[in-house]
Amino acid sequence: MIKLRNLTRAYTAGTGEVRALDGIDLTVEPGEFVAIAGKSGSGKSTLVNLVGGIDRPTGGTVEVDGKLLNTLDESALAAWRGRHVGVVFQFFQLLPTLTVLENVMLPMDFAGTLSPAQAKRRAHALLDQFGIGAHAGKLPTALSGGQQQRAAIARALANEPRLVIADEPTGNLDSATSADVLHILTALPCTGTTVLMVTHEVNAQRFAQRVVTLSDGRLASDSAARRVEDTRC
Image 1 (cartoon, one colour):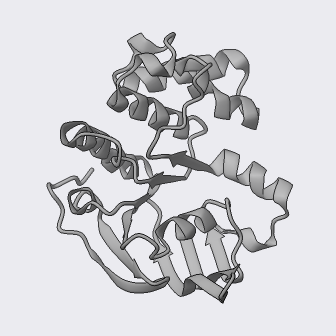
Image 2: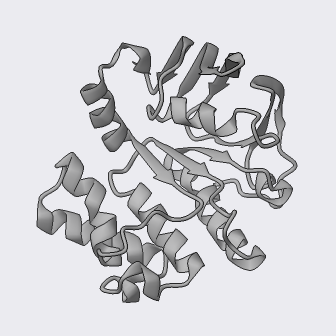
């Protein structure tokens, strides 16, 4: 699903070149749940931004689901990202002036894959699936943090992406709500969805199948997670 080869991302700073990523080689299979760990500044967010087509590498290659992202121009990359990648953020990033339902429909509207009526039905179905269907007509601020993150996951899944990137998805939640969100993410590989989760939380890492740890932009370790429970499909 994901193949990174000699991946490098460098930035120019006042003191010279800074390498956020330095020669990363990594393969993630379809339907894997992989946690990306490491200290602040280790390159975690840079890595998932490159995999999600949000940023471009300085060197090396990024291949996702058979698509070599380096070869795509900006418009093609944006179209690919909107159709094939779902993103879940730490602070939800729901548009405050749209209802929860409208937020979930938004990626479908942008991609144009479904008619408005079909998109509305799918959005309702996703909200029902995550237990917040009764809040579809409310603005995001009327929901709790956990409910907003459930809505954000529903939005990320709107276009049935093959890849979901979760960047610190539990960083703004209490422990009980975090566990609920992690259980949702854990179930996604059962449908064939690949999950790449950035987290510094050890408990969150234990919900993944693998933990890839970065240090100073390099791959420090890649090992099977000590899972918190048996989550086989």
